[in-house]
Every structure is written in structure tokens, then in C-alpha cells.
Length: 248
Image: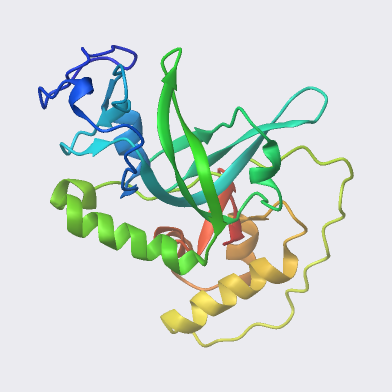
């Protein structure tokens, strides 16, 4: 595979010259994993033929449909938004627009979003120019992972699924509530433990997540660490930063 930033000739691997294609042809948005966008070969074409990425799975991506978690807002020194980062568990990619920033209005770190857009490359950096951004349920993130496992096969199934979140700068510090550890439920069934972990995070999260060590101390049952890791893999919670988690 060639290095990122190497532009192929205008015919591409199909050997079809750009002049043979119809102008203004509407392209299908292909359900894609972010690692396909980051690890594929970028083809820059001429004429009406659109640029595209040839993914490691042999798929030609000119227009993509991606579902992921908004992990970071990219701000200027004047605290003006200039783009966002999205992570789907296989990788992270920036969304950039050269028009109005209103397409990012109403989005917050931790939101699960669906993006329809075109992958691009500049100075060896991959990004997506979004056409449509829609907030969706976290269930769609899980469903998309299953769809990609089905479509891309065993190699994709081995992809680690871990999303790291970077919170935007906070103008004011919010005090962390005091945790009362005096009452403990002794039911240690898996479902109950999952519920207790998620309830503890929701009740005590002041905005920047909860330390895993705090959860383990508060729940105080054998195997709590393993249950937290299972919730991370299921996508029910995510890491704000190493060792600190939030409910999705």
C-alpha cells in the first residue's frame, strides 16, 4: 500500500478515464469504517470524476456514511469552532467545512452522530467534508459495527473498539458531588452490576466523567474492573481520558 499523500494517476485502478463519466452523477454514500478512510490509498482524479479512497478492503469510497462519537471540538485561540473529531472505535477522523460552521450547531462532545460526506486529503491529513450530520441513538453505533463486521469479514471483527474523548476547555469548574458509599447492594449478577456501574457514573458525573478507581471503590464487588471493560466494549460507556469514563 502506498503512503498517505501519494496521488494516483487519473484513471485509477479501474482504468476508466474521467471523461467517460457523466457530470453531476449522484454518488452513493457507502457505510464505512473510519480506519478505511485513514488507511486506504487516496486517488486524486481530474475532470468530473470524483476523488476517492481505495480502502484496504478494496472498496472505492468517494462518498461515505459514517457513524461515530463526537470526541473533540477543534477551537481557535479565540474559542471559535473550526471543526470536530469523530471516532467510531476503529479510528478517528476530522470533519472540516469550508463554508458555514452552522452544520456543527447543536452538537456536543459525547454525541453519537451520523455523517454523510466526502473524504479528502490535504498535507497528508485525511478528513471528511460533511454534507449532512444527524444525531442518532447509541444503538445505531452498535448496529453499524455489526453491519461492518458482516460486510468486511473476519479481519474487521478483530478491530479494537475503544473511543477516547477530549473534552472542550471549560470556562468554569463544576464542583464534584460528594459520594455516599454507606449503602451497597449485594446482588452481584452481571445485569445488576452493569446497572449499578452506569447509575453510579450518571449520578456522580459533574461533566468530566468518573475515575474507574472511584467506581471500583464505590461498587466494591469482585470483578468490577472486568465489568467496566465489558461496558466499554459494548459502547455503553466511553473513556473521557485514560482511567476516566462517562455514560454514552
